[in-house]
Length: 330
Length: 185
Image (cartoon, rainbow over all chains, first blue to last red; front, side):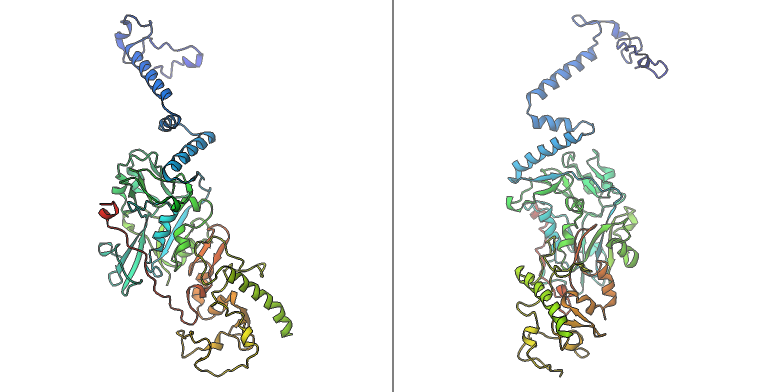
């Protein structure tokens, strides 16, 4: 309304809303509708009416709905707000899973950038990582959701995704003449999934983990179309897992129970790694093929791998710059 | 001299076995975040490892061997240890390349140095130096615990049977359902 040169606010003079420089009102402002106060335009009337209607609706609905409504408005949460949001989500999670779920909101450690390395010469394709991941991260058992896909490929053809088989079913592994390549989120430095999200529900955290806010996700699945690694999963139906299998130690950006209609993905077990622990897949791997650590720590396993082994990233030509490195230990 | 050495070593070894039998000990639960009291006898272990994967009741070896004469002859074992089949360079190697003929509760390096079973990586590393180097930094084999703090290692013998070290094939966990099936249709 006022231009920078006028400095009305600086002088402490209240602005006149019906002044001659009121934009877009033109001469209409002069024609006062009967029954309204002298300063009320039609636009203002509608605005006031809308505010009153919204206010009365908000006053009539319960606390949880009110909280959910206000979460959609941009404002920085105070620590008290955060506690209230978490408490609401924990109550909701209890209602849906029947378990007292703890939801942490631990922030990234300053100066840490996570990296992951997987030894293709060791992996035997036993899928124990898949299983540990499902348990740790409360993935839906029915319908089945799995963040890790283990691909079986011919040694003769090398890494060639066009002939990879994710559905191999064998008595024992490794099968003669084959090697195995587990694929999950590559935690790109230039994540295309983040670029395409229309609502900013997915982003890269300061420690490099790409996360999803399940309360912001609108389920459009653009991110799934954009991800060149097929790493994201969609909850087509209400996720279901038995109460006794729920992992109650969760993180807001990670393994807390998800609703139907949102996208989820590997977070390198954000609820574990922000506490200093290794991800569940690293802990379970019976051949020790999985390595995890801080890329900025020169003594970490991942740094040793990058400096001393033959390393590659998947689909390097796409310039997604993954922080997930495949290597050959021998 | 040797007796006093043994007297010091035996309680330590027994303590290790005691904690091993208490935890059922064959292989450690991979997801357990903390090592059981593997090194309580050793206040400053170089690498924190769980107890060695002994067959039940087999350690300390001296329990049987102390009263037996040492037979240095290379032969096939028919009475005891018949389950041990050497697939680890069987023509070049035999028991006493690694086991110590006089003090059976320790392993022996090529230099003659005795090492406890809880530090067997020093023995394996004599030949497999490149693996030992990678193992120490946590790249060969598995480390669990904290990426930025206390880490727990596994001994070579936890994954590789020392007498037949090739990693044995495993049964894989079930394949994923195909998309329509996974969606419950």
